[in-house]
Image 1 (cartoon, rainbow, N blue to C red):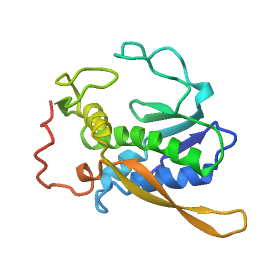
Image 2: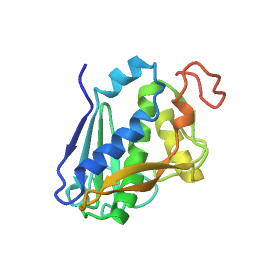
Image 3: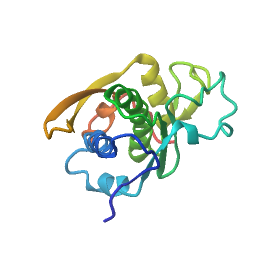
Image 4: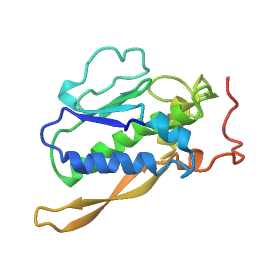
Length: 191
């Protein structure tokens, strides 16, 4: 079994802290006995890059203008790419990780619901309310619009060897992934 691949091209952020937070967010969404999902998770690559490296084309077609200078990301098949502020510090970590959790939520819902389709409950940058798309897209964007977040904590090692607990505001999709075979009436059937 391979392991999830996390690649950093950043220079200044605390890579160990980000890696710990990424792994905590992902593994916190898996039911402990769901071995097949763990295996599938390990086939993914997560790239963390500075916003300065973000392409400024290729995302046309939305209903607004995307600011490429702020943290954002793209999730595809087996790869998550997030562009973050490459600045060390707790406040930048909080801001960056909010975006990272958004992209990881797409990844998790691709793993759990690859063939499901749904109608958007709310408009977003890409489409209007009522438009149909992949569930792993519509649900993440609808939950962003609705402010569906939870607090996740991660321990940070300080320069003096001590530790501090950092609360992170993350996109909440755990109700869709944490237990197998429960009735979830809000999940559309596979297409």
